Amino acid sequence: QVKLVESGGGLVQAGGSLRLSCSVSGRTLGRYATGWFRQAPGKEREFVAAISWSGDTTFYADSVKERFVISRDNAENTVYLQMNSLKPEDTAVYYCNRGGTVGSVRVKKLDASWGQGTQVTVSS
Image (cartoon, rainbow, N blue to C red):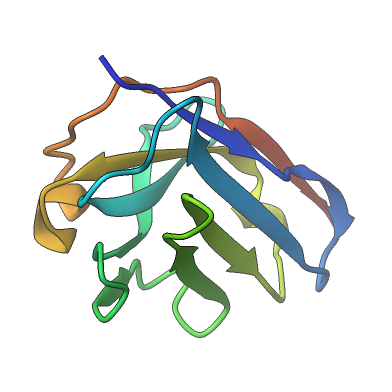
């Protein structure tokens, strides 16, 4: 099964920014919607944002709306998550995955295996 690869995490102060990247090793992302998820210690993995294959449809969790922006460059086979105005509660391991549509991704009807994720830590 295809596995996506996340990168770009790190340690940042509250109010700072990070940009995460998602790609597929040795393959294209394919004509799938792609989304970002996160899991904080002791919590369930939750949906963060999703984007359609064409890039013309996006959807965000309420907790990140107006702060995070999802985008994609199909020529580079990469999906990005620009995270601005970061808060300590954004601290989590961030994962990407893909599905047929933005709606599928939102409800975790996903096509690929989970990768290792990338750690984002926001200090107060």
